[in-house]
Image (cartoon, rainbow, N blue to C red; front, side, top):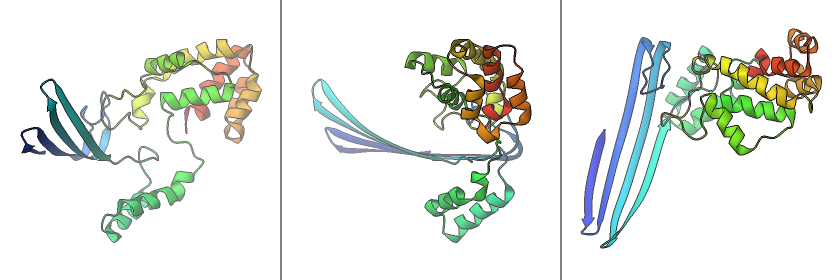
Length: 239
């Protein structure tokens, strides 16, 4: 970490600092400073850059103005928790070939066929699961109900526990699936009189729905049960 304070004049002070965090290791466990409340075995390589600047100006005996600027950069994969080795190799080669041009690396990432595969490897985060639920049902919730439900599921709106945001790996959300079941039953009881489960299944999953999921929903003992089973189906839980 590097910090610099510069007195421009008697009324203005400029403060800047740059912070670089790197944690790496084989057979490592990600620490709470990187991923709060989540431990995960495997190769751990995290790089976070952060730059802050602050200009403090004394305008009068009782008035002080402060202008702040912050920039940060972090690297996250948007594929499975263990990214495809071939993709990692292409990204590393592109990084070296372009002298570290992140724009070109990002283009390689986006254009990679792995990112467009229909295979569902990632568990939806609570917010994604709730939005999918509301879109499939067509029944809106007020913002208070929406944010309250997200908080119960561990993803408070705009309040991540770390600057890098909420985690995007499966291990972070697996333990919360029991709470999703309670929430799914609550939504199902609310939607049961207004939504046809089969129509909701076709809207939400279409060709992604397996024959097993379709049969499970069709054989449910009630509309509410059918909707709850749909919301907890593996295809609905993943992206």
